[in-house]
Image (cartoon, rainbow, N blue to C red):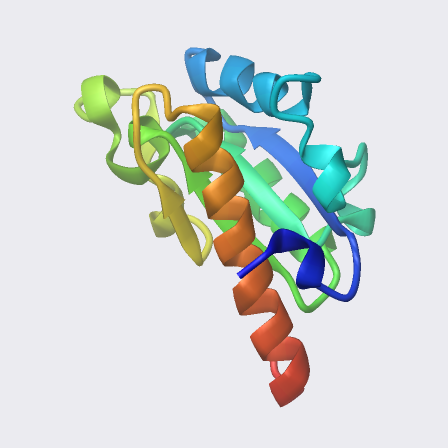
Length: 144
């Protein structure tokens, strides 16, 4: 399936909940001319109120629990959450840290997982495409 077959652009809000920034650098690489995700209509936005997808990196530290929930609630429906990187999925090297509240899916519901430490830009683009498909299906069914 071609990414250009979708009916609208996909706006993504990036939320770092306590990562080491390895995943964040790879997310920025997705936007560079080499990968150029914007040609597919994938665009980072500066506010969760404009986003279709929350792209979350890192394990959720205790100080980010309330903020993460608030940002999730601010994102309009239909919305999807992507957990990017092993830390956000399972805690990885930080899993026994005293400052963690847990992986992302213990705080907010996650729809798409992109594993890796850090995941390659191609994997991130594939994860966004999977989120796009889920979003299109939910729009057709009228369910978020």
